[in-house]
Length: 175
Length: 167
Image (cartoon, rainbow over all chains, first blue to last red):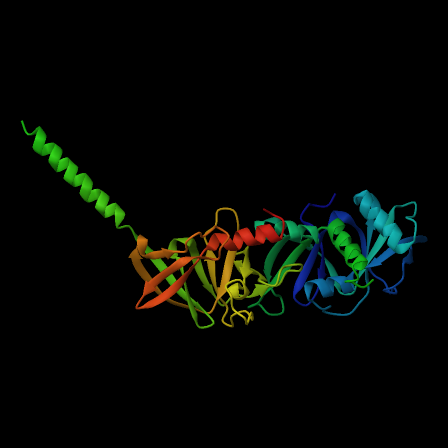
């Protein structure tokens, strides 16, 4: 079992998005069409959702290095409403393994980050931030520019997907 | 034998004490937002922070610029201009922020400059008649012939909680 403070870190120019590693089965560099509704991985046809453009637009950031990264996740870790929205959006059934793919267009890495370096969002704006997938925030020295601090955002995978699908329904985000 | 005079002395001492209490002093922090002067009670301000970055957050109303980092803790940054009646709502240019002292929230406003501190009697505040706690102004204070509007820090938090459904 991984320690609870291991995170999959998706790095954009001004922000690192953190996802608890327990939700990520594999993270791999794989050339996939952003618009593809399914991808083949390990002899299985996985539902595929590309959230890179949504992250960039929503958080006003850009990929540090354009690349295709696929995060394979277990549908069982997600609430039923999110599973249903993935099915509806991709039109692809979950395979036997229950895996599905989430892709982004920036670098990923695995990081051991002290949970104590993260903070809850200020209370009056917390509810809205949680709803759109932001669970906590932290500030870390920028490795490229030590004087600046980089924003770290702990993402809630279910809520970021809810926000993504809600954006699509409202015509605010692209697939 | 001296009861009467002792009572009298005690009464006079009490009266003096009450008079002193009536003249309670308040320190006002006078600051500017794009050339206009405003005041807040210095007791409502936890800290003045300069030269820190504001980190934008999504799905926020226009008057919330984002959060700033105060020694690792995030504080919501409010651009007060549209809320206090400015037609130009561009955030003040200098990265200067008043951190409000709040029990249950982390809140700051973006200002242009700190001007001075003024100590005045508590009743120097000319309160707005029929003011309510959601109003951004508590009243005005007179200083050197100038009427300076006094901001109500509670109103900012009340507005955010109301608009973002966290009331």
